[in-house]
Length: 126
Image (cartoon, rainbow, N blue to C red; front, side):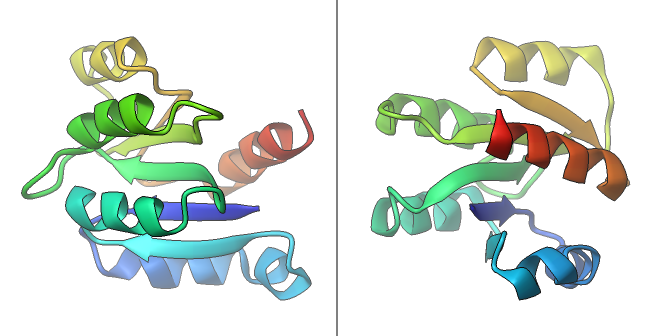
């Protein structure tokens, strides 16, 4: 399963690679990283049928994660990738907007990697 992580914080890539090293080593999960919404859209256009799940931060400079979510759901309809939003703010306004725009899940930072792995297993295996 290929997962695109979209976050402007540079240390997120190292964190994901560390926390998922066994899944990466076994080939169960492949990660790609984008540091902005614009970069994520470019990546998805080039790898449209590879990306199964997108984990996107909401608060980023330039295109926000919510705008990215809206564009993904409009542009990649069949089948749309699963999109989980990640934010440092567990506020209900962002949650409601994300859900209205079609987010499949909502996580708060710091990311609980144990819970995330469980969610990914459910996404992969139904």
